[in-house]
Length: 143
Length: 103
Ligand SMILES: Nc1ncnc2c1ncn2[C@@H]1O[C@H](COP(=O)(O)OP(=O)(O)O)[C@@H](O)[C@H]1O
Ligand SMILES: [Mg+2]
Image (tube, rainbow over all chains, first blue to last red; front, side):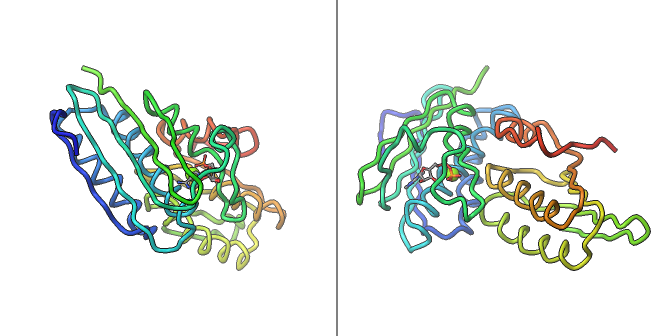
């Protein structure tokens, strides 16, 4: 955790689908004192839910693993990292294309990255095959 | 989730009350597919009034039920879609095939 943030927190939890709601609610309550609008709050919750779900179903493919979320706040900027040590992404550019999914049989829509990109102010992905994936996101809460 | 069947109109109404993420979408899918196959309704209406959160799992859940409905010859509509949910559905393009009805 970086000390030069105004405020920061880290959480870790097992890759249980049950924890998708916990993760987005934890992040939402941590940023609540920045006084985001209902829409800003919903955007952040949705983006966190997308990234955490991806770690659970794609990164770990429902095997047990650890998902980590780091949140840092500077002024009214929220920086979020969602980290897994799962199987990694082979072609990140392709994965980010709208409607691209490797799990259509689970009724995935392939819209996760598109939603993260459009709901947040910044998003980028780093991934190494066999080592895991980190999604970085940034949201500026308006005054 | 609250499911009611109107026999006279062969209308199956599905009122979703849960937050729709990957975890809940799976449960909703199983329950709703079971009910659709049980009644073989003429019309299916999925109501989102009580849904306070939905992520992209909702897209697949809605599209999948639309496909089940179509296979059985039922019509499928959604209603009470609030702005945060509409934003996600619009992005996915599924509103081109699944109508939103106003009540
Ligand atoms: N954390 C991750 N680990 C491994 N693969 C991932 C991860 N996140 C995303 N992916 C890959 O990127 C694809 C696109 O992700 P996304 O846009 O969220 O769509 P969806 O989850 O509906 O498949 C996934 O189908 C998967 O192949
Ligand atoms: Mg996804």
